[in-house]
Image (cartoon, rainbow, N blue to C red):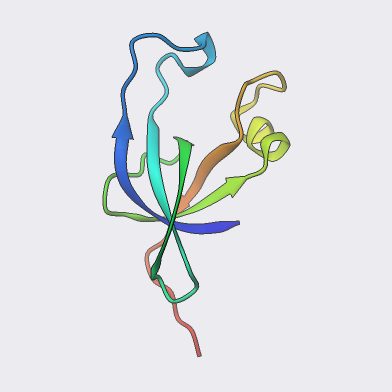
Length: 89
């Protein structure tokens, strides 16, 4: 699982049919202290996240396809949760 902050959306007119009616978000990876790493992922949104929210992502194709329910989907990254708060010692 990867921590990230949603920083944008992606809109396309031509895409693989799997992506029809799916929301794609650009997510900046964060370190454990919520500092941006400068590395980005493009993820399918499965939890109705929005720009500015801290999220939990999965960046492993087979697991993402299992969550999406399509074993043949051209998919690698998916948002699986919205994080409300993080407490570190």
